[in-house]
Image (cartoon, rainbow over all chains, first blue to last red; front, top):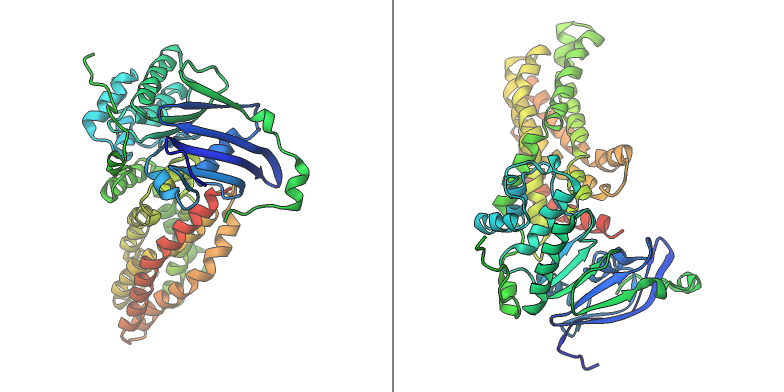
Length: 221
Length: 242
């Protein structure tokens, strides 16, 4: 099938299940260079599972996922090469200081300090992350987006969770900038996100037919 | 604030060449920092090791000959249990805070990250056990001839235990209470290490050479050092796919 080269990420007829229960079926979308997509849907509809499927952490799915025209799981290494994923558990280690956490992600000290300054975390560089509030922890995780040469593809699971108004503004500005420089963003959020262009996919409209999964359950390829 | 815009110009494959994720030495440094800051987890296995062994002579009676006879086996079994006790926490924290998932997403294999964790685990549990062992030997009326083989066999053996145990820890990381399952998975794999470890001390006490036992332990260590991180890495990927 000839692929549209301007679509970095394409999802065709994606269906997922979890613990034998169908979550959603027949989800289609494409992410072109410089576009963002917000996954919506009620709790438990499978937003996080969809993201985890796209990054290859869940192998039980139906359908086709294409990264730069090549299908997963074959193209998974290339996808991960240009991926920045921030999940529900943000990947911030409570036993390390804020700065150490960013260095752990391969940041250089100067750019890490700059990123922290943007997120108003000045003065917390050497605090243990275990002593920070939930919102501050979220900011530390999001500081990864402010490092130089950020990867092209961002997958953010509830990035606005626990953020205050200022944090949301800073994040939206950064996301807009990422889009304008040719990046791609896939995010889930219950709150409205001020970002354009922003497509929306409501997973509630794709809630699966339970029967399908009892007859055939796919275990990847 | 006069900061330059981050991530200026990111499109194109060329920018993907950026080394994402931590290097091996960053991993080692962070693991060491984490281990040193979690002091209770650091001290608990050691404390367990020392207190149980201190209680043993009280429980079984203070006859010097009996204690000498039991010393190699008891000290080794306790070292094994102390390692097992600390094994559960090896990947748990990283799994819960999501950094294990981040590690698994890196293009680099998990092998090095897992190796770094195991190395630090041994450094903060196995190494202190081995260094403390002559002191405990003294408590058990261990003859002078037994000190060196005890320390050396524990030095090699605890490294084997850390490596082998990492496989079980990786397999059970997604479970809420892995305690007994973890023990069931890795205890059988610990047995050869126990046999040759306590065998080395016993051989030395009986007046024989003990280089064969140490050589076998070293062989187990090299094999485990090469293969266990590989298995643990694969097990982590299985645990995360859930």
